[in-house]
Amino acid sequence: MDLVTIIDQDIIYQYSDGRELLSESLAQRKQLLKQLEQIARVYQECTSVESVPGFPLGRVQALLFELSVIGEYIDTLIAEINSYAERCGKPRVRRLDSLLQ
Image 1 (cartoon, rainbow, N blue to C red):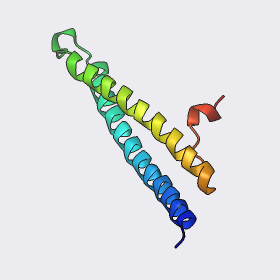
Image 2: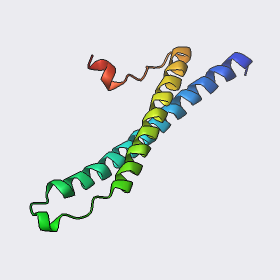
Image 3: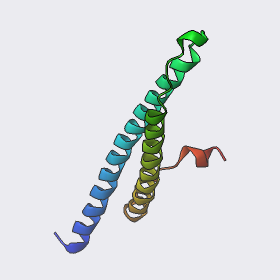
């Protein structure tokens, strides 16, 4: 194998690994959003002032922080994947929010 072929294969592997990491990160993000939704649902379903449980502010703040961190990680992954995509002729990853504009 020549050096160019090895470099091309490495770029393709990096692209593939990046897409795999992106998929895993999106699944983590989805799980965090579900947890946040469950907490919100508990408080929306409270109909009696006497039975309102204490709001888990610390847990909500931790979830929001985790969502922020994973969001930044996802943005970075997308940029990296698209960099590899340009070099190896693979499809780019598009952000949904850019499609809505």
